Image 1 (tube, rainbow, N blue to C red):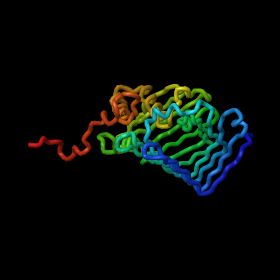
Image 2 (image 1 turned 90 degrees about the horizontal axis):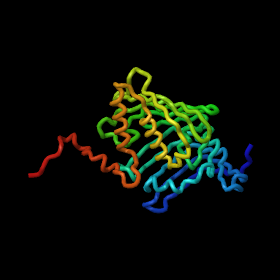
Image 3 (image 1 turned 60 degrees about the horizontal axis):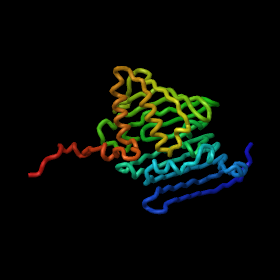
Image 4 (image 1 turned 30 degrees about the vertical axis):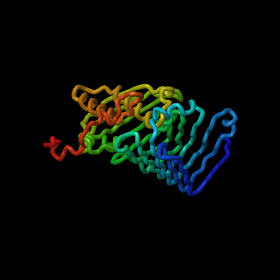
Length: 287
């Protein structure tokens, strides 16, 4: 048992909004409590224990290039959350570094016994006892037992996860099942991916198999870049049959549209050189 210094609050509100050029976040919760381990503080580490958020609402506005923020992430095991519970949570992400801007809402979030290393925040999906949430018209569910776990994503369209519903083929979606096993340094992931058409129906088979190895030392990334890396590995390791290759190529094309470039790579705005009003009959040259 880990002893801790306990903090609790009701009707908690936390706001960080220094100026219009910096990231902004807003958190509110009707009930919240957590404990800090004093023993870990003596060794230069922060461990938050038994964090609980009830009816939590979190809004994050991203204005700074995520690649630039990676350098500020702590080293592994320097800042961790253990046994995080969330009841009836909502997360709204607005990314002003993407055209639109990009907007994603995750609702009805319920987490039980979740752990997370702030150094590799995407590991949250692999370290919860139970969790579920709604994303657009679809859902995500995760859980684990000892060293094995699963992640299931159902019925989410490309338009909902890319915030570009009006782009052709964005009505298509996917369902994904992943099983993972391993220790604290790496996870072996394998599963199947199914591409769904605009009616929400996919092929009758079991889906396209994929598999890859996660080394957490390679995921010292912000949450959005960590998710991006996971999606990239799923698509790269997919082993489609002859009839499924076109579906994977199309999915990679959609992913490339919203993938955050690094350095001097081509921006998303350059890649997405589309006239979204083309349904009016195309362009015409003035006399």
